[in-house]
Image (cartoon, rainbow, N blue to C red; front, side, top):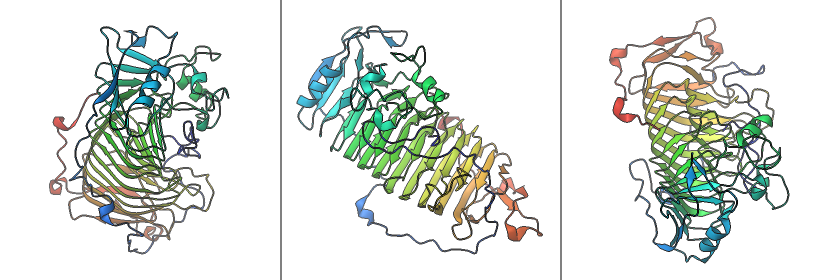
Length: 491
C-alpha cells in the first residue's frame, strides 16, 4: 500500500495500517552517508526452531478443503449490469444468524436460487471453527452505506478523515481460531460506485483521493489476533480500502484466490500480512491499485512466510514495508510473475518506522513491463525522522529474469547498517539504470550464477560509493530463467 495514503489502523478494531509519508523512492536525504562500508557478516538472530514452521517453497502442505454445510442460504437478489437490483433490504442478519448457529467444523453455504445469485450485506463476524462458503456463481456485495460500517455503530466515522478503526470490515475474523472463507464465488466491495448518504456522487475511491488518502474505509476481509485462518479460491474485487489484512495472526493460508480491481483505485492493497507468523500465500492472481502483497512488521514480528506460485498483474509489486519496526524475517518468495507492476521486488522503510529485515529470498521470478524491478530503499520518506533505523540483511535474489531494463534502487541506510544483497543468476534483457546515488552503503555479492549487470565506479570517487554507470556483461554467459508465454496469465 502507499503508506502515506491512509494506513491508519485496523477495520473495526486497532489494526495494522501504517503511518508515514510518501517519499519518492530513490531520493537522497541531505545527511545520507556516502562511505562504502567494510564487509559485514550477517548472522541469524533469535531464530526459532525450523520445526515451528515446517513448510517451504518445496513443501506447502495439503491444499485447503471446504467443510460440509451446516446450512445453505439461497440468494435473495438478481444482478443487472454487475450490481444487485434490490438495495432496499440487507441480508446481513440472515447470514450472521446462520454463522452464529453453525457448529465448528462446518460451513454456511451461500448458494444461487435460479437467477437470484447475489447477497447484499454489512459487516459479518465469523465464529470459531466455521467456514463461510460462497458458492461458484454467487456474489456477496457490500452495502454502499457508510453508516452500516461505522464502528462503534452510530459514530458516523466511516468514510471520513478518521482512523481505519472507525470502520468494520465486511468480513471480520477477530480473536478466533480455525475460520475459513472459501468457494468459487465473489466478494465485491463496490469501491468504485457512489456511496449512499451525503457524499453526492462520490465513490469510496473518490473520497479516499479527496481526503489525501486518509479516509477510514472498510476492508473486505480483516483478520486480527486469530489462529489458523484460511482464505481459499474466492475472487475479491473493488474493496473501498485494502482487500485482505491479516494482523497479528499465527498460522494462515491464502490459497488460490483472485483479486482483480481497477489499477487506478487508491490504497487497495490485495493481501497485507501484518505482524503475523507462519503463513502461506500460494497460487493466487493479484491485480489492484496498490501493493499486490505488502508485508508489514509495524506492530509485531513477521516470521516464517512462504509466498509461492503467484501471478501479479498491475499494482505496486511484491513489497516489504514500509513499517518494519518489529522486524520481518524468514520470508521465501518463489515462482512469481510480475506483469506490468510499478515495482518488482521491493523493501521500503525509513527511520520513522524502520527495523531489522533479514533472511529474505526471492527465487524463480519473471518480470516484464516493470518500471522498478529491484527497490531496496531505507529512505522511503526522505523527510522522516526517528530512531528506528532500517537494516536489511541477507537478502537474496536468485534465478530472476527481467524482460527489459528499468530503474534499480539498491542502498543501505548508513555504513553501520548496509544493505546485504546477493544476486545469483539475475539477468536483464536491457541494461537498467541505477537511481543515483545507488548502490550506496551496500555489500553486493554476485554469483555463483551469472549476473549481466555490474556497477562501474570512477576511481576518483570509488571510496564514496557513487554509482556512475552500469556495465552490461556478456549476455552469452547468462542462463536466464525461462519466462516464455506459458508463465504469464490474464486477469
